[in-house]
Length: 317
Image (cartoon, rainbow, N blue to C red):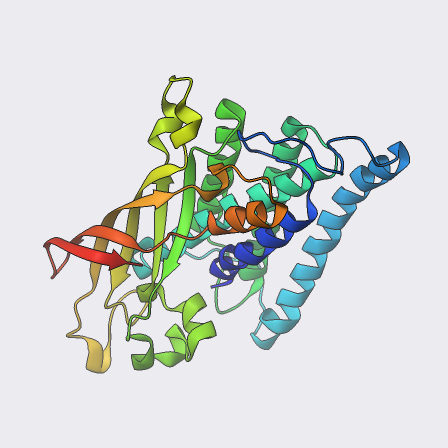
C-alpha cells in the first residue's frame, strides 16, 4: 500500500517541481532559457549553496518520511526480530507493479531535483537512483521488523527494477522513451472487504488493487533515426495490466469463494506529455505531472481466468 501511495503522490510532487525549476532537465526538448540557473543570472555562491543543500534536503526528506511512516503506520503493529516474508503469490502481481512504479517515479523526481540544483546529468541520475532505492529499501526494512509483514526480497527486486528502468534509459538514451503509468477506476469490490481493500475514495485509491492498473507506455518514434522524430515523440502506445475479483490477497474466502479471480491485459494509445514543447513553466510542470497518469482512451482488453477473449472499450481508464 505504501509504495502505491508513493507512486500516486508523484503527480503532485512533479507538478510542484515543474513550477519551481527554471530548466528542462532529463528532457530532449529544448527551449530558450528563462531567468534561473540556465542563464547564470543567480550568483555563484547561491548556486553552490543550492547544490550543496540538495543532498541534505534529500536526506532530511527521507528521514522525515521514515519517521512519519513509523508513527502513522508501524508503531500500531507488534514488532519482532528481523525476518523475511514471501508474498510473491499475492494480488496477482499488482503489488509488485506498484513497487516498480514507485522505484521508477521516485528516482526520476529525485534526479530532476538534483539537476535543478546544479548537478550534471550523470550525477543527477545516480543521485536519483540511489535515493529511490535507498528510501524504498528502508521501508522494506521496517516491514522486516514488523510482525504482520516481513522483508520481501520480491518487493526489493521490484523496487530495483523500477529504479533500473529509469537509470538505464538515462544512461543509454538520455531520455525516458519508456514510461510507467498508473490509472484507477472504482471496482465495486472494495465494499466486500473494506478492512483490506479500503473504505472511501482515498483508501480504495491506495488499497484496492482491483481498481488499479499499471501501464508501460512506449514512444515508438523515439527509437527512430529520422531527424524529425522529436515532432512525434509525444505519441505513444501503452500496454496495461490489471486484476478483478481479488477479494483476498491469496484467495477468496467465505461468501466470496465463488467470485472468479481474473487478470487482464490492455492495449491503448497514450501521450508522453513532457515531450510536447511549451514555453510556459506552468504548462511544462503540468505536462510532467501528467506523464505519470495514463489518459482515458479507446482500449483493447484481453482477460484470462474465467473471463477470456477480447473486448473493446470506446473509453477506458
